[in-house]
Figure 1 (cartoon, rainbow, N blue to C red):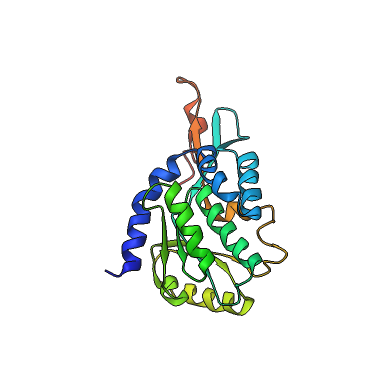
Figure 2 (figure 1 turned 90 degrees about the horizontal axis):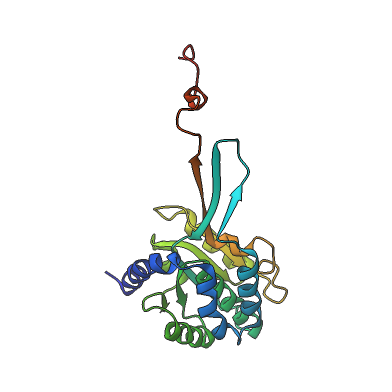
Length: 225
């Protein structure tokens, strides 16, 4: 087993408990660290104020539907050598904080000194095993089927390369979340950005009273065979 495999397994074992915390609890732990990263701090406030734990959906009489969301799993936060400016480091941190706030574990690629400093700050404040740093290349990260998503900061050309690598990867499809315009934060200030790190679940409960008209639950009539 490689070091990267060991890290992803450790992150997976911690992610479930982290995901079971409320978004408010996760944001409360992350906010003090995020004060050094303006975009990340803004995103945490957005998550706290606008991403409800659950949303009651409209439905027919006798049925209750609730929309729930949670983290995808382990997210690789990665970059290329074009992402060496302070703005790119801010975008990299924003990816990491958003992934964590939405219930994921993270493995940060050691692509800059800023990544190492960020990993150290997060690892000290969060549950052990939730945050790791890796010297692996983009290709090695893309080939690891334990990652549920890739949060990338870099050029559009290297975004295409990473996307092609992911298309050839085995296992479940992985989400690619790319910020290629870190000076303007086009993706990370978009309305749906935090939701890209989540999966959605709908809980449906039939609330029809016992003794009601059971034929209402039939998928088809007696002649529909």
